Image 1 (spheres, one colour):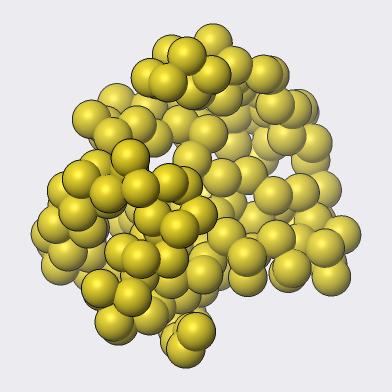
Image 2 (cartoon, rainbow, N blue to C red):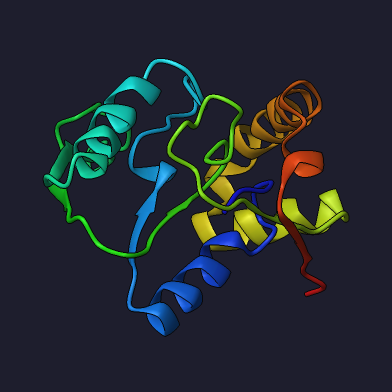
Length: 158
C-alpha cells in the first residue's frame, strides 16, 4: 500500500489488515528524513525473503525516541509467514519489490491538504521535513511510475 504522505494510506492499511487478519509492516519502521528510500531497503527485503522461504523474518525498527533516527536500534519486529502481509508506506510498491503480490496506491491530490494532515499528525516542528519529503515523493513517483503500475488506485477525499 503506497502513496504520498498524508494521503491516508496508513489508516486504510490498518483497517484492511484488521479486516483480513493480516500482519501490517510499515516502511516508517525503516525510512528517515535523510533516507526516504534507499539504504534501508535491503534490511526489509532480507526479512521478506525469509518469510517467502516460510521462515520468520526479523528486523529492528528505527528508534526515534531521542528525537533523531537510530537505525535498527528500536524494537524487534517478527514477520510470521501467513496468507496476507500488508506492507504499507511510501515506496513500498517500488519496482524493486520482488515480493509484491498486489499494489494499492492511496492518493489525495491536494498536496497542501496532505501537508496539513501530516503536520497535524506528527507536529508543527516536522513541517519543514514534510515539505522536503513531498518534493522527494513527487520525483520518486514520477521515476518509479508507482501509481501507473498499481493494481488499484484509491482516492481519499478528507
